[in-house]
Image (cartoon, rainbow over all chains, first blue to last red; front, top):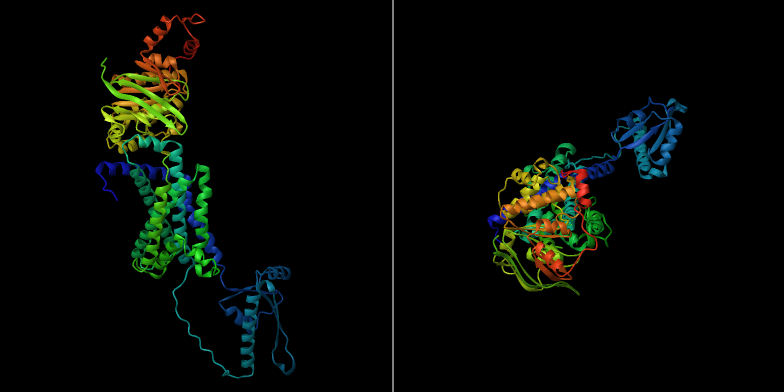
Length: 368
Length: 253
C-alpha cells in the first residue's frame, strides 16, 4: 500500500465520516444491518425450539387415580393434555399436534386383582413419537406387573450414566451464521448501491475536480463500511449475549476474535460490492446481481445448517464459497473457543478470495 | 482590466468514437474576467470545460491553467479551481454544513461553514439537506462548494438553467460579487441576455468550433455594422420586464 500523506489522510477521513453519517441516516442500511439479523435469529431460533416433549391427550372420561397415570405425570418429557374435548383431541391427533390419546379405565376382574384397561390411539401424523410413547407405556406396564407379582429384582438392571454435556443452545449455532450473512449482504449491497448512486448523481465526478486521488475515494468508502460493519457485528453479538443468552465461550477474547474475523471477511465482501457496482448498468440492476452473489452463499455456506447435512454432490460447491469459511472460522472461535491461529486455514482461504476478487474489481471498476 | 491570460487553450481537439465534439479551438481567458462560452446544445461547450477542469482527457492540443499544463500537473490545477457541474448532486443524506466539511477535507483546508453559506444567502439552511432546497438555492449551494478552496478560477456549467427570473437575477449578482473578490469565472449559458449582462467577453461555439470571441458589445456592433436590422423594432421593455414588474425582483425561495 502506498504511503498516506497527511493531506490524503484528511481527505480519506472526511469522506469516511460523510459516508458513515449517510449510512446511519439511511433507514434501509439500519434495517438490513441491525434489525434483519434479529428477525432471522428469532424466526430460526423458534423453528428449532419446538421441544422434544411428547404431547399426550387424556380423554375427559379417563380415570386419573391409578399408578399408570401417576407415573406418566411424573415423566418430564411427557405433557399430558387434559383440558380438551374428545373431538378436539381427535382433531389434534389427526394433525400430529398431539402424539397419542389415552383412556385409562379401572376394570377389576377375576382374582380381585386391580387391572386397568388402557386404550391408546396414535396417528401416522406423528408415527415416531407415537411409537416412542407406546414403548414407554410397555415399560410402565411391565414394571407395574412385576410389582404386582411381587418380583423385586428384575432380570435386567439398566444403569444409565448421563454425561454432563455443554448445553448446545440454538442461538449459539444461529448467531455466528447470521453474523456472517449480514456482513456479506451489507458488504455487497451497500457498497454496490453507494458507488452506483454516487456515479449516477455525478458526486464522484465532482470529487474528481478536487485533489483527492481515486484510491483515496475507495479507501474512504471502505473505511466507512468497515466501521459500520464492526458496529453491526458488535451489536449483533452483544444483543445476542444479553437478550438471547448467546455463549461467548472465552468472554471478551472470543468477542475480539469474532470482530477480527468479521473485519477480514468484510474486506473480502467489499470486493464483491465493487465488482457488482462495476457490472451493474444502473441502480435497478444492483439487487439482481447482488442477490446472485449473496443468496447461494446464504443457503449453501452453512448459515443455518451444517454443510455436512447437505447432499454429497452439493458439498463441493459449499466448499468454494467464502462465506463457508467465515462461518466455519466464526463457529470454531465462537463455539469451541478456538484462537485465530487455530483457524488459519479458513483465514488463508478468505485472504485468497480477497486477492482474487480485488484483482477482478480493479480490472472491472469503472469510474464513470 | 488586466489582460493577463490565466487559461490558455491551444488547438484543442476532443473526439469520441466517431464524433468530433471539439474541433481545434484556441482561446485565452484573462485573469479576473467573467468569460462566457455560448452555443447550442452539442456545440462542445461542456467538453471544452471538462477538459480544462482536468475531468476529461483531450485528444489533441494543449491547455494551460495558471501556468500548469493539464497533462503534467492536473493535481496542481485541481487545487486552484472550483467546479460546478451541470446537474451534479451531492453526497446523499448530509446537511449542507456536513457537505462543506466533506469538501474542506477533500481540499485539505479549514473553512468557516456559516461564513460561506452566508455569502451565498443560505446561512439559515445550515442544517437543511441539499434535496430539500429550491432550484435557485441548489445552484447557490453548488457555487458555495466551488469556493471552499478559495480558488483562482471557478467554472459554472449552465448555472441558471431552469431557474425563475428572480432566482436568475439573484445568481447573477452572486457571480458578480465573486468576481469583485478577484476570482476569474468561466461559465456556459443558453441565455443571451445573461451573457450580455454578466460576461466581459464571450466565445460563441457551434459544432465543435469557436465561431467568434469578443466583448458582447463589440459582437453586437459588428453585426449591426454588417447591415443587419431586426425585423421588428425593439420596444423599450420586453415580457420579462413585465413579469418582473408584476412579481417583483425579490427572491422566492
